[in-house]
Image 1 (tube, rainbow, N blue to C red):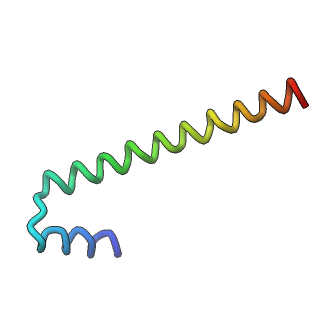
Image 2 (cartoon, helix red, strand yellow):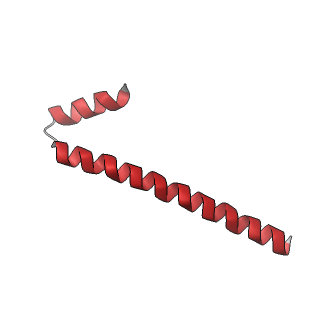
Image 3 (tube, rainbow, N blue to C red):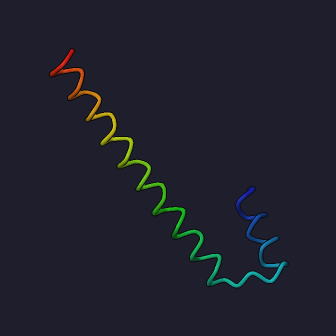
Length: 53
């Protein structure tokens, strides 16, 4: 897939496996941070609408 091709290109350019692994870990962490942020935002909006609406 596209991800495999990107990793192949990165390897060809000399990006080390450690850096690639770090980037993948960082991407996973960012997804979780985004997910939690969305949940908190929706909850706060619900609270505002529920109590002031």
